[in-house]
Image 1 (cartoon, rainbow, N blue to C red):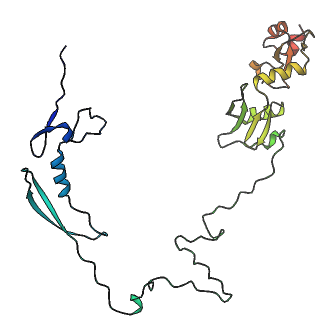
Image 2 (cartoon, rainbow, N blue to C red):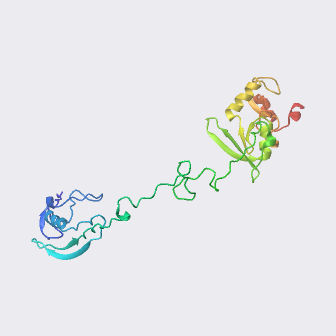
Image 3 (tube, one colour):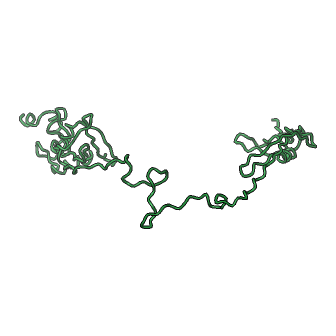
Length: 270
């Protein structure tokens, strides 16, 4: 293997002389390496800083003169000579305009009672009275809150939809849009309540609904009277039934599988 030796000297970009790396400043960029150095050596950097022009004083525009300077080391640079104008002499007039503080605004006018007069409207930075802004909208007058069980209070949106919201078994909130007809059925069959005229809320999650039906029917099959641990729809879902407390009952596994999508009268009359 061959050893890679880093150069210990560097050529100055100004005096063109090879000098040790300690005479050059390190580079601090993200892509710079360990031996990266700047182009000017220490002596050339001092000469450049000595010839650097001074900034203007107090925002005055200075007269700039350029001249060429040749240093002892052979460095050729441009020297900028700056001449600053003298501040103007103060006026000898003794009029009111020369008195300090004469340019200040006069105190506000006072009313007959001795209080300061109110500011004129329309001035930038001044506060307006509360009722003076014509763009301020009048507060909306809301009607009484509808009854949670009153399905006739629902008003659909322009698309004929009602917003339904609820929570999952893990407590996560969800919402969806449903038809007005379905929303009315869910409220009338005690599966949802009215929040406002455009929103209903589902009362039970899936897990809570199952526990409610089984506890309400005391784990007794609605058809045979034996032990039941399943839920069956009186009006099958295939024929327009919904999962609501009024349409669901407790049933045993055998009756649930046998009834399938039949009507109750058809299943019990066999």
